[in-house]
Image: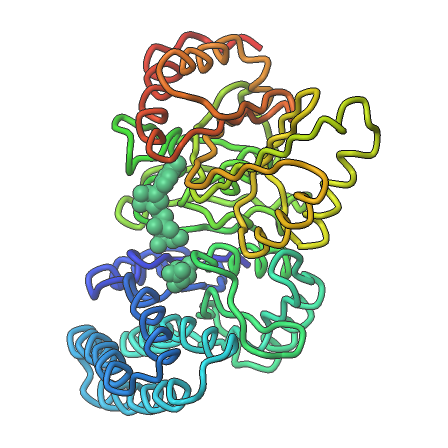
Length: 444
Ligand code: ADP
Ligand code: ASP
Ligand code: MG
């Protein structure tokens, strides 16, 4: 069985839903199809949650009606058969009534998750009906019946697998199962979500859980590029990446993949293909555990980074000092991305600032703390990148951009630098030119 995931743009219009249908029918192997919400819908649902927080009933009504007419218009154009159209519209009305009921409750984390994951429920319901209208047999599965992940960072793959097995056993047999990305249930069985962009992660969790033969992530670009195409011209798709390389790139900001996409399949030998819905023939990127080529592969950038400098004369020669600092971060469940040290100071970066005030307060009892926000980590990735003889060129950046931190040698596969976010785009462009445009043979 294969897993095919289609992102927001791929399911974002009637025309594109036809493309997705063509891709599904072009391959006979049985598949679980994971869909996102139509592009823009999750953003609208996030604003709806804001209205719920402020109990602004007029704004809630306006928002939900907007979502209703968007989906109703899609049904009108997508479905030719009048009976099926009528049935789907009735179903849509029931779902919209339910969304009103949820949105009229008091705000809570659970209400937030119920609302922001509703776009996936709406789209999969319509898409399954569309396939039915064309007599393409399919079964719509409710992801909430099996995506019990407890903690987002550490899903219990075995448990998800057992649940999917049961759901598949109990449902009508088909070669196409459609389900929702992004949504999950937490420890208490309450509805949760896998964080923004989480449908990629749904696909790999399901793929690992059922030991799929392959996971295909269909999006609006022909694979993972060697630099961020939103900011840099002349980027190129990378044909092969290892799980490690893809994991580093996703974690350090390559938006094409949710940061945790790769983790469920590492060690499983399930290839992950990144494919373009608008150019299905393009080979895209294959992520697997095979190394085809060592050395520099790609650059990515992660924003929203806070740099913290901790300075203390007492650090001089004092063993146990670093442990004391790390314990504070650990106690507040705040993970550290980059670290550099000198004799009397340590600089580190975090992206989760929700407990920053408490962390600073604790450390300030024995050290001087300086905080700088709005930084970006620029990450240069590739198996053995530190041995790539061209990598030195990245340090020419020091002539042009103030670099706040450098991390080299922490892993063989990653060199990271920290810059002010206002310098991110020039840094990406400079590195693209230095490292990819005038590139020679890689010698490792
Ligand atoms: P989907 O809605 O299908 O999940 P996303 O918008 O999440 O799609 O991801 C695809 C987008 O990621 C591309 O359109 C591209 O602009 C952006 N992107 C950022 N970095 C990269 C990269 N290194 N390679 C390819 N795409 C990237
Ligand atoms: N619809 C969700 C989002 O926009 C999940 C996803 O698209 O992967 O974040
Ligand atoms: Mg995405």
